[in-house]
Image 1 (cartoon, rainbow, N blue to C red):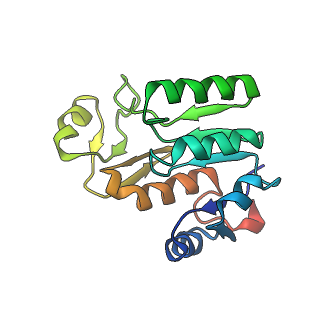
Image 2: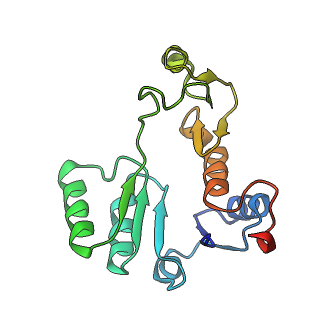
Image 3: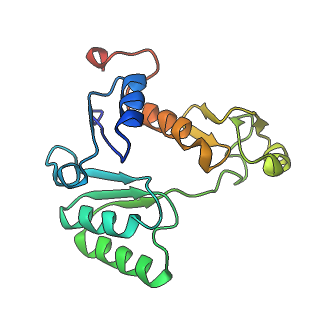
Amino acid sequence: MVPEPLLLGRNDAKLISIAEDLGIDAYTTDYDSAIGSSEHALFFDAGTTVMRPELLDQALSKGKHLYCEKPVACSLSSARKLCARADAADVKAGVVMDKLFLPGLIKDRRVTCYEHVRNEVELAGGVYCTDQAVRDGMIVTAQTWQSHPEFYREVLRCLGRPEGQTKEEV
């Protein structure tokens, strides 16, 4: 079963563009209705660090499972409070990590990153690419924070249907 995503953001035009690119029907700039949606059990936050603690707290109050960018919060104490709250709420929670260079993980995989990290990629056996975002199987990499639109398009493709498959075929 593949969950049907609800895209949430601050810029309607960007949401429309991403939704059209990915064939996603649902998108909104209304944070309250999105977080309160009973149809969506997972809240994936890729917003700004300053916004993140409040959004995660709101999602937790609605019983949502969480997945977010790092850092979880602007301070260690705030991050610890959120983690304790997620633990007490008995929800699944995950944070994006930068562990691509673990031995064997990127061997013979196409990846992209900051230019100054290229050596590490190649030493780990990865194939460095200059694209803004690269997907190789279920591994998605991006060069910089400025690559987020391309990166998240690929992440959503990983969460959704396989390349070339329509919604009806899933």
